Length: 309
Image (cartoon, rainbow, N blue to C red; front, side, top):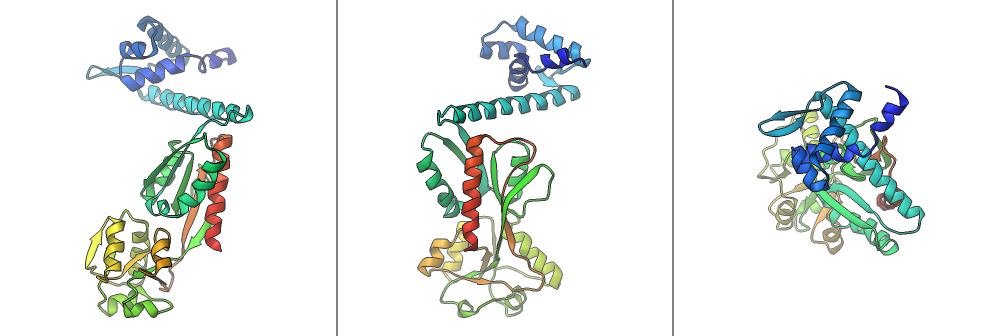
């Protein structure tokens, strides 16, 4: 492909193609973009001629990308995200103080860690808008890799050449229990001892980050644990632990207030081979973040670093 032909792949047609893929028809895209359907049709045919492949096909009355079209659609998405990032950078350079940043993090950070990061940032940059999605820690990395968010905060994100870790902070996993429980006076506990003594256990669902560590301990020690309660709702886990129903398991993140007011006690687990959870702030290693996203990523790094104090 000649350089002049390649240049055509970054022209106005990308908006046409993106809209056709989104709405599933040329006529629908033309209505949204306020252009004649023939203009969009001609542009797509021109690009198909340059590339040498059909990009769209009709399936059940809807235009969908062919395999070659999927490759082009991915390229188009990258270009449009790049344009948005470029605009944000230009705005920052011009001093317009505008832009938008998206963050994905596991839910426990919403209690104290995320406010610690966002409050000073918002005060310093009051016109920057933010989206904060709280999801399972296990899927944060995939959203960063896909370009769906600018910044991710997760436990033990999988190693990937597409991710850059700004900071990784070791956070202990422990037993969380009522201060009235006699075990609350212990300096450390082993899951083995809790299972062996018949202590009522409250286990998180497989989607909660602590579950993987618990399964790791059980596997290494060949224990069989039968929890009294298993739930995917972290608030229920904590309420039951506070009420003295049983012993729950998690890191101190998300229960900072309860630990300060004494309504819950955190006792680190000391089972052999158990490693601290690594709380990581991650960004894409393949896409250059906007200036404002870089500023917030640094604020997140600083916030996470304070956990070490």
